[in-house]
Image (cartoon, rainbow, N blue to C red):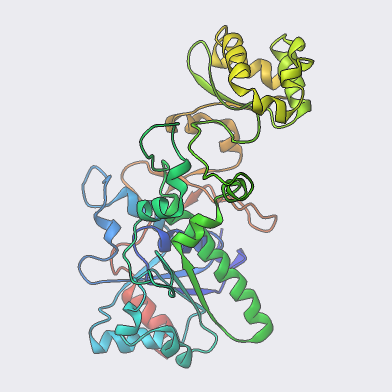
Length: 386
């Protein structure tokens, strides 16, 4: 499908980002049709070009291509006067600039927001950083695990009395990338009203605090900091992982109706009237007794057998899939959530676009990621030469 039919068709983005938080943001914008012009350093480019795993030929990083498909690459040395002049000219031709340098880096190069908005008052300048562009920790270096730790996420992840556990994906980077894209789109819409651009300042730490869900509410009500609970929900019961005859799966009986259906599926209707388990508050208060009963029942059948039974009764449940199982999942196939990348000697699948829109037809594949500097001459000729 041509980008001209996508919602962000015609929107041009200067992408100075590298590794994950920024590239994830611009990947989302590319999925929606924006033209992403990836500005990279000479010789090395985006740091993640050198991150494994690599294709068999050892020349391309699968990590890099999974985040940068469909983008265009231009090589510029922003410390050289000629390239800096070219960059400033490009700024005047684009709608959005995204960077994820440490705060102050762009200012040292003479291309901070206050300078660039004079060149292009309509420019939307998005900065994603560890701690944001204000506050006493603004200049501190940050990685995903740093903000997972600083935000409290790691304090509620893992099993009781176990060592601290990092969330299994780089949630600090990814969530900040999503929030940055959200801010960019809000600013893009507001520009249609005001005619003016603005700066979008997103901190990874802020984003982690924003997704603490009910942890803050629990602390405010209970006066004690929440602790890790393994795979169970802190206030909904039963809502956790259970072991069947041949492995683990999850059950999420999120209300009294679903609890009654679960009891029926287990052929334990007596539990519905048990005063210890009458409502969610009772079940949560008596969770240890409840889990002991449920574990005894669930150990009698396999995960697949329970899945079939619980589906029949309408009880939310799922096996705990490993990543390889995703490729055989008919639901993910129906939603086009694993798509092939074009132009590689080896088969390469990446996640599809999770944003489904009635005017955004699905694509069976995605274009390949750019070689370093591949589009330098093309971009200069297209945007800067009359």
